[in-house]
Length: 217
Ligand code: AP5
Image (cartoon, rainbow, N blue to C red):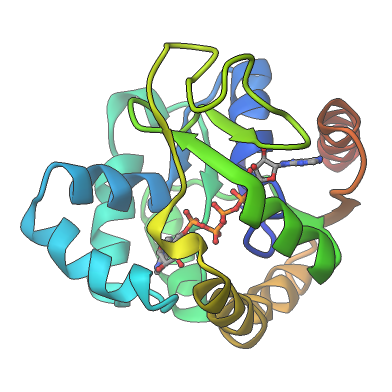
């Protein structure tokens, strides 16, 4: 399956993508995680991306599309993938369509995770991410690690993302509404969108997501 996950910052895209990718046996491709890996390796791309991410803005399309394309062309993504955080505006969605068309492929579904703004703000304020693997995500209240500051999965150090400050989160939400939400209509016109409530326990959201994907097949 080829799936796009869309939703505001803090809706739980990363949390759900990890679970869905495991169940569906497809790679989880997160452009945010790819940028963060570049930042920690101090690559030129990482240096460029950091200035945009810390301000809550989108990294320019040219570099983002090239990075996403490169990742989607890796052998493990031949049979499908779950995109998290890409596409993030209509130009990126058009670029993805073109790429898929060249390969004679198409998307199967766009899963739209809906969560109220006050809830996503609370989730982001309490989020802690593992330095070893950004797929290991916790929340100080909702899903706390057994030992404060330490990842349950690998023992790595948990930290708060630089772009999770209150001011940057407000900017990221504004960017989501103005630049990313329009892709939902873009994909609705292709009949691909399944909207689910991303509130309630994590397991319950996963159950809703799998149900919605089954309905769409
Ligand atoms: P990215 O990393 O994609 O961030 P985001 O879209 O803002 O989303 P988040 O990672 O903040 O949230 P999430 O929805 O994954 O929530 P999570 O599962 O962690 O992008 C970061 C930046 O990179 C962008 O601002 C941009 O600069 C750049 N970028 C990335 N892609 C780009 C692109 N395509 N084009 C241009 N620029 C790009 O959950 C949040 C918290 O809530 C966690 O603590 C979790 O434990 C908790 N939680 C999750 N589900 C639940 C639940 N059901 N109940 C209670 N708590 C929950």
